[in-house]
Length: 433
Image (cartoon, rainbow, N blue to C red; front, side):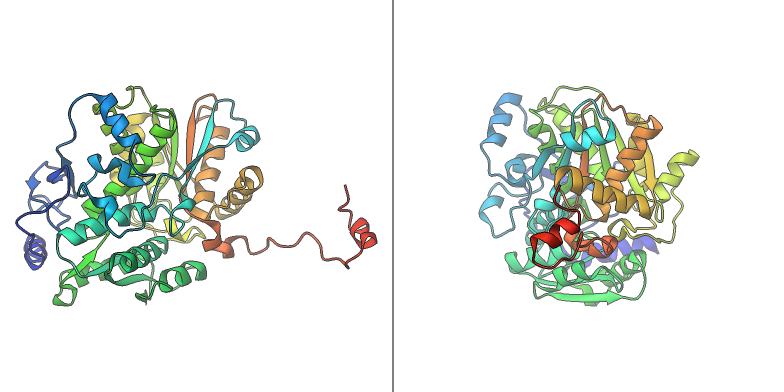
């Protein structure tokens, strides 16, 4: 029955005979390796494994490719030769995300006892203030190629805003679905772009199940769900984080990288991006470790890693880090594989540690992270204390969103004092020194 359902979904969204997605050559099953033509499908019809984009990547002199990339725009489109997008993508109406700051976090390093280099890849500088602008930008190009008219998604908040903004810019209708109890900042940011924003009673996993039903129904005709039927293309946007980090490090791999886990797709695609750079000769091959970060109230991957399991057991989320609150992460098993293969680890922190880490990053580096960033910084601190992360090596920590979206998490933060407008009152408050 499931095989039949996949076939129905594929036939409902027929693929054009000619699809220009640059170097993308087809889709490949991550489990059994079966190849498929480019199209709006996301699961293998043979084994139901997840599909990902397969490429004909550029061949030739790495230095020539490096120069071509460096001469490109200051956005993810500088890496167009490595992405499933047409060559003229930068000329189309889009939000041009990416090439965000890699912050040399010397103050945070001192606080954490890091003696090597510590960097924060701050993706709050994207157009809608989260890394989701990267993945949506790629999905939009696939939606154009496959003739969709409506952009949609299931979202924990950031993706909803990114889809709404990208759709408005690119001329698509948007209709996105979120859990009904999201942080108000994310609700407003998703709604302001004029598309339809629908709250679903339940958590993210309930929202995702609903979207999977809608995509197989005639009601979903002409809809491109960026993280469902366009997921193979959407996921490739996360590779650009790996590309940028290495380029910003002078075309070098970091020794260690700490990445938040929601569905797990970001972590797996960053690893894929690093491996592509190695194969292309753009960076020197050397060992690197990938660490995953989860909130204790939604830590199915961390629990599986620590137990030595290969299967991730779903959990019911209960954490302030709602952008990471996916209890049944699709890429969870692949995260386990990567953490083990690279010698990394998957750790979690509780809500109090998340809030402390948000304040620590703000106090030391002037970066106001959302709760996902608090999870990543908090896990980094914990990994150092546990002796799992080497403080003498070059480490990159990801901040994937802006703290203005999750103000509820630090609602007790406010004025140091309230005084009368006089010097005597200021002195009396003990603030003069």
